[in-house]
Image 1: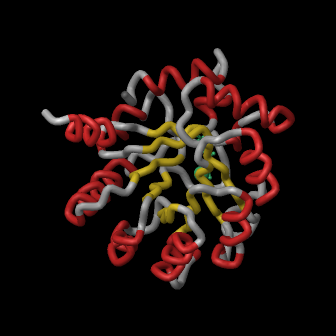
Image 2: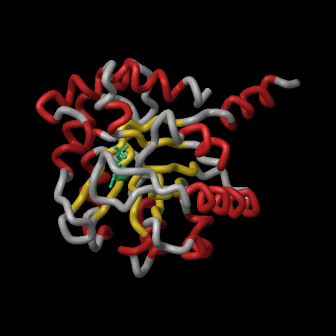
Image 3: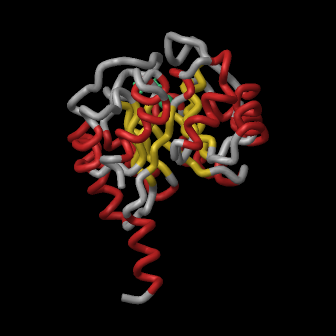
Length: 231
Ligand code: DX5
Ligand code: ZN
């Protein structure tokens, strides 16, 4: 095998752990991110909620900016907001690496994904648990990342919806048919109980809030137990 093949293989088998700071101790945000980074987190997931698209209000561009100052890790910004296109530039300037928009909020999804890339960010698209996977079909070629919600968005610490597994499998097939190397990310209820099945279904990136930041043995242990499944 040539070194190139080995490199390709390493890339293919790379799994991403993206701790969600929604579950972190916000009075210690810098320390919490540093602990996640030194324990081997790959990305930092930032949940932006507007109290309209989802029934909760969380954080905005100032927190993204603050995260950018304390870590060099990619910032995986999940926009659970109405009219996300009006805020994309602001989040890009704040230091987002990936901007992920909900299918349900974007009437001009194809244009929005192209716009995200024109801002120098990776373009992500996300589906609520009740949205048919077919809604992705026409834009899949534009996506650098596809996110499957495995809980209804709005809160951390919810119970994993098992039907998500079949949805991930279906999207994996769609990506393969297209020859797409987009990340297939899952968000909601990712834990030692669900991670093996999610990997098996074809997920390559794993958002984890509660199971990392609220792990009884601490952040490092929370990441380590997930990493044991994601090598
Ligand atoms: C939910 C958010 C998630 C949340 C996941 O709306 O999008 O990112 O933080 O939390 P856990 O991992 O606790 O289910
Ligand atoms: Zn999220």
